[in-house]
Length: 162
Image (tube, rainbow, N blue to C red; front, side, top):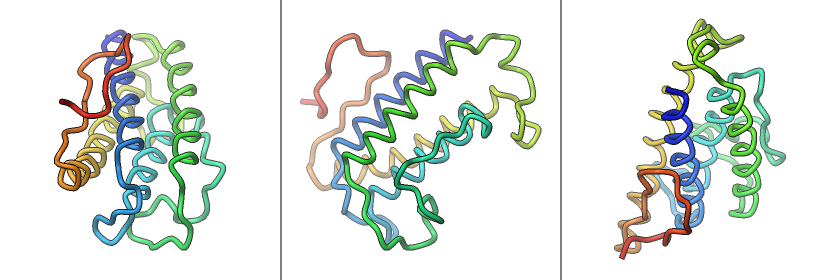
């Protein structure tokens, strides 16, 4: 089970990176720029996937920046998103290295009586909803499909499918 979770998590992380690299981060969806949709998903992934006690937070975070209901007066760049993404990815891989079948099904600290497994599955659903919305905007704008890997990639894949 842990191997499957690791494989799917690495694929999700690759999809996060691809979405950051291919989206027009200033295009708007539901009155918010796409960078904010990506940040919202990444923020909550950072918070819930490895449990709140391991939350890192972005250097650029400010109150309500993660909320899609509140307008932000700042703009977050691709570079800043990628830096935060890399720190979250590094933390997530280290978390997975220490996860086992026994700890997977234990209630996690400060997680509303959820198991670590429930926190992980919740983030798969949440992140792919937001990444799907952003990628749909990219497809609509560019008329190209963002390449979505199905497995951990050993080689560099194109950002868009041919």
